[in-house]
Image 1 (cartoon, one colour):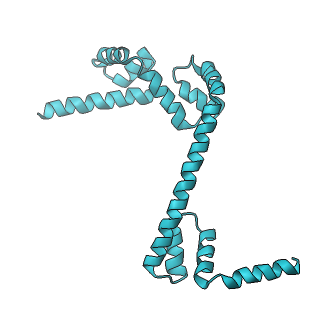
Image 2 (image 1 turned 90 degrees about the vertical axis):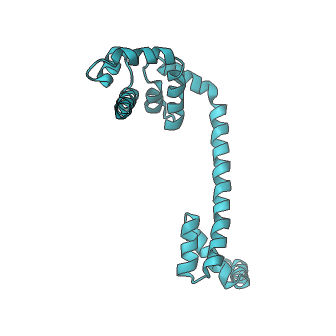
Length: 172
C-alpha cells in the first residue's frame, strides 16, 4: 500500500470514535437488524437503548433496499412481458400451466401460482358442478382428479372443505 493511502487510512481510523468503529464492525459482520443489536449490546457492551436505536436505523436501511430491489424486479418482469406471453403460450395446453412455467422457464412460484389461480377463477360454475357431481362418491378427491382433471391440491382442498362443512352441520 502506498504511503499516502496508509496515512489517509490511519487518519480515518483515528478520526472515527470507538463507537463508530464498533458500529461499523457489527454492520459488516451481521445480516439483520436483530443481529446488529445483539452484536452491539452483547459483544461491544453498548447500552441496550443505544443498540436498539442503531438496530432500527439498520432495519430502515434494509427495508429501503428491499423495496428498491422489489421495484427493480417488478420493472424487469414488466419489461419482459412479451417473453412471458410466449412462455405462457407454450404451457397453455397443460392443466397446470404454472407448474410448466416454473419447470420449463424458471418462473417464480408466486407468479406461476397467481397465473394458475387467475385461470382457475375463470370457471367457478364449472368447478361447482364438478364438486356437486363428486359429492356422492367415496373419494371426492379421486373423482375430481380422475373425472374432471383437477389438480390434486385443489381437489384435496375441496374435499377437506366439504368434510369440514358436513362435520359442522352434524354438530348443530
